[in-house]
Length: 175
Length: 161
Ligand SMILES: [Zn+2]
Image 1 (cartoon, helix red, strand yellow):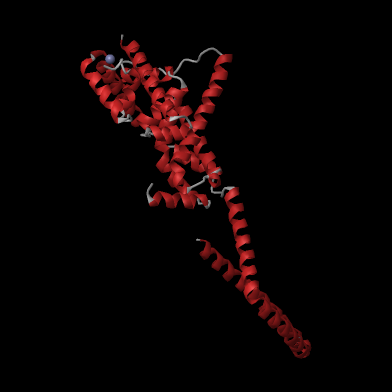
Image 2 (cartoon, chains in turn orange, cyan):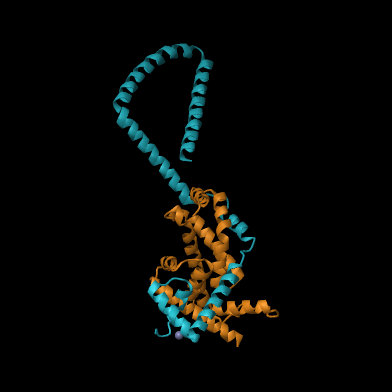
C-alpha cells in the first residue's frame, strides 16, 4: 500500500470527511465491481456499495491497522452482498422467482455478456465469491483463504469447481 | 501416468501449485487431449470473467451519494476517542509535572499565596477608592484568561496533528 493512501486512511480515522471521500474515490471501483458480480444487478450493487462506505465511515475506529484498509473495506462489501443475497432468498421463497435482468441479445457482444452473467448467476454465492476475488480483484489463493477464513485447500477446490460449473453453463448457452 | 487431474487444472492455470504436482499435470496434459481441452476452456472463461467484470465502472453519482449520506459530521466514536485521548494526555502531563516539581511547586505556591494576600491588602486600599479602576482590573484579568485559553488550545491542536 502506498504512503499517500496510508495518509488518507489516517486522516479519515481522525474524522476528516474529505480524506474519506478520497478513499471512496479510490475504492468505489473494486467495491462496485465486486457487488455487481455478486448481485448481478446495477441498482442493487450501487445500494450495496453505498451501504459499504457508510458502514465503513461509521466504524473506521474499529479498523485494526491503517495498512489493512483495502481488505477491510472488501470484507464489509462482502458482508453487505451476502446479507442482500440472504434477504433475496427469503423474499423469493415468498414470491416466486423474479426474472433477472435481460440484456439486449441483438449483437454478438451482448450475447456473450448475457451468457456470462447468466452463468455467474447460476453459481452459488460461495463460488461467485472465489471467482470474483481471484479473477477480478486479483487476490492470490492465500489472500482468499485469509479473507474468507477457509483453508487453502478449500480455496483451490472451490475455485476449480466454480470455473468448471461456469464452463458447463457457458457450453449449455452455446449449444 | 496420473489419473485425469481435473481438480488441479485451475491451480495449474493460476500457478498456485507445488512444483512436483505441476510437472505431473504438465506431463499428463501433453498426452491427454480431453484435459488439455478442459484447461483451454477454463482459461477462456477466466479471461472472459476478468475482462467483463474488470471493465464494470461504478455509477458516477455513487461518490456524491456517499458524501451526502455521511454529511460533514464527524463519526461520533472518533470524536469520543480523541477527546478521551486528550484528557488522558493532560492527566499524564500533570502527574509528570507534579512528580518532578511537586515539592518546589508547593513551596512557590505557599509563598505566592502569602505575597498575594499582602499585595491584595495594599492594592485594595488604592482600588477601593476608585471603582472604575477596579472594573478595569477585572476586565483585564478576564481578557488574559481568555487569551491564554486560546493559545493553549492552539498549542494542543498543533501537537495532536
Ligand atoms: Zn486427462
